[in-house]
Image (cartoon, rainbow, N blue to C red; front, side, top):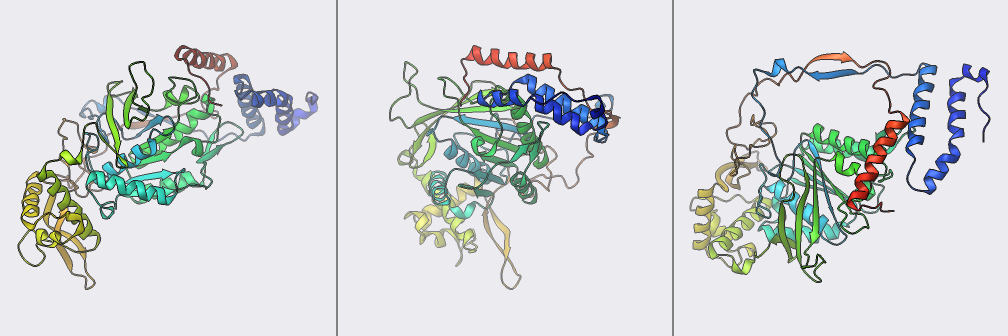
Length: 491
């Protein structure tokens, strides 16, 4: 054990801090061996670092507190709740999706992102708007992602040509830590974090899915003082992209657990969803069942406990009881028309609703994606799709080699200002920057709400750190909740 600092050492603040940290080295080693870092160690190190910085004159410049001026907001309407997927995925927040190994979390996330990117329905849910998405996958090779996406497109009646808004980043076998923790316990974002954020901002991506936490988080999952700043960094990312961040995780080993590690995972996210296999009457998993249930375990702004039932079929999740063999003839022809339209668009072949050599039903009749549907049936399907607003005619599609605009039919990415269930869209102002295809988009945005009108200095040291008793109280609360729920650390 290192000797205590001498009075003369106080002339060198660095020596003081080094000596104090050396005195706690033995405790730190004991903490590491027992996996659960002791709260007293964190409190002591935080106070030592603060004192050393103060003695050395190295304090950070004073931050300013930006506060809401409530009287100034009195004349502004109350903003409506916004959603990415009504009731299930929030913008400007982190959603945790957990589930046991082999339940299909990655498939669920990839399929859901496809739905959001294309504006299509998934498990009876439709996104408020078709927006670009980014899927960061750390576990599957590109070939597997390709096979999975092929099955997803078949389930949705789409082709790969329609996935311009679905950005997928395969990271299997690479270093995937989003950052590290410094000696003061602060989360420092790394190169991958910044690369993801920059790509999302360049491409107006509104939903980022990170699969999964075991590859991306380098801290101790049982330590709330590591979990909270990590999730806060993801929440800041959601704010910066004005969208949602989905984090994929695993449950602990204990029966009934719905997430692994500290209860800070539960506290820090705004939505927590759990994917589980079908259970029998005794609560045990049904052997060989293809059915899954997605449960809303935590929801700040929606009813807790609501479920979505699904079953795995032909490589994708579909609503329980859904079978393409039972699909009506009209629906099959409509899906065939849309699949052909996607292929034609991807091949830069514009088609028209007007009779002629590029009449869409005539061109599609000869395509494999038509599945043998006749020109007449494809024409009737086209008219139904026009009537429902799922396709649009005479759209400016692209420029040819001579710079001439090509006109034709395209899928409609536009959505109503209000969804069928009354949920407002993502941007109540109809921002043309975020939704270039949205109808009724306002040409001019109203002035920003004056949420911040005054700033106040925070002082040279910011808010005071927790004392040891406060750390102990927070840890005791964490342990009590874990014990009450039968949760267990997953080591």
